[in-house]
Length: 479
Image (tube, rainbow, N blue to C red; front, side, top):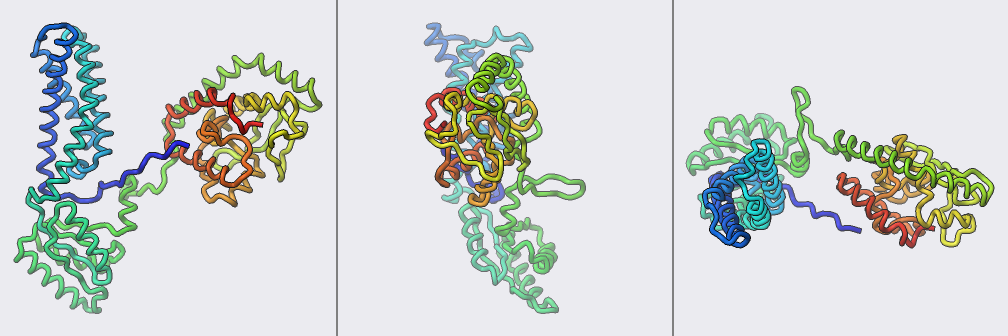
């Protein structure tokens, strides 16, 4: 099983010192300089090695400036130069690589449309592209480490701040203070408010007046509030008292709110909503997957129709019963459907008890053993794909009896139903195919199916289809 990609911690909502924002334009300027130099040097180097002369420097400077300008536009659009993002190494490398490729694609399209390709050496531009793909990640690592060093060493003047919390949540306030210090803030003092103000609000009012005096005397630049977001009474009172100060005031999210802020936020009329869970595939992705399913299923049925007829006739000649076998399976969103298969057994189990096929199973016919070994018995499911019950790639659908059984035994089992089931899937190409005599094997199959749902892409579907063809012949579990 392929290991799941490591999930990086989202630092979008962790503040950075105001002084670090000064670094952002410097990083953008640095990118313009090194890209221009790289374009010039890579062009001259290519000309010297491939053509044996010095080349025209002005052409390479021009191409370097063009790519640098385009890269800067795409990098700004990707928010590469936002101060918090300068510390995110893996995130920076991914966005920077996409911006680099986008700059070259845009430039190539522009050159083609304007018919100015004669001014650019294809070899030199290819050398520029490849060398930039190698150097860009190095620059992003250097930028992230430099920014982290600048913050840790207090080279830039740290923002002078005070932290206001609630006495009953003192530990949370101290943790917040430590996090702010790590990000370059100088937390001059942590000020705690009474947990339960008296009915007249006297104690809280007196404490807030003292805080306002302290902030004015100590030349504080920013105020941080570490107060639970559900303490509306305290928050309203604190906000009213702090309005007299000409300073930025920021409310640090509590644990639950921070989790919510990491999720996408959308406008819904006059209000905003937080997306707790997205659909596994967007409308565009569902359309692309459906188009590929329909096209390949139609092509497969057209090519395999003669084989259909031959196999159907052979099944009828070998044993009594229909050539095709239909069974109730669980599909998308837990809905049942009838799956089509070539009949490979002397029995046609489809009820509350369905026994999985085992090695040397007496119910499997001689022809059926060959069909199951090569997965040819699954080919009629192309009809299910055309009907929309299934996809070419997805979690394998199980019989109703097995589905009910495993749903009780495995907590995450039902997640498999978030997308359409498939003729083949990520679990199958990773060896989890056929009989599952142990619960652990089914758990591993479910884990593979969930990974596929979370990281779906059209390219992943194509990869699984290719792997299915390559591995189906040597599968040890198909019987």
